[in-house]
Length: 165
Image 1 (cartoon, rainbow, N blue to C red):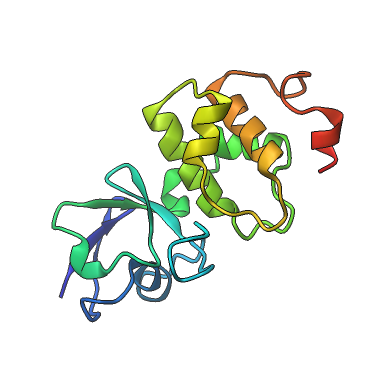
Image 2 (image 1 turned 45 degrees about the vertical axis):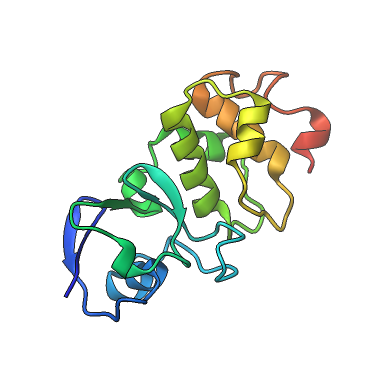
């Protein structure tokens, strides 16, 4: 029976080795913030951190996780939504439907952990998650706000066209 470290807590899980991590997180551990989107690691709704790296949990089999690996889900990013990315998302109201947002936030947090002051190009390259609502301008602006590159309400954060997107 594998033991997984999820959000700093040990969980004994009784699953087949080829079970996707996503199903363990949602069904065995009961953390439902990580979403199922496409099931083939394309959309990013299932993004979590594995040892600080963003991974798509729908395609990562439990057997690929080693003892000592640390998994962080959206619930483990902060207990009270106080992570700078979460605060930036709320400050400029990034989500429309919101389905992809936990994966988007996890991807942005991983980017900022590696590159504290990303450029637009850095953000575009790192944020490969799909948003069906098309809130990419807001997502980019929120990453800049979380990085301290711009302030909420500044002309640089969002143009009026982007605010209405």
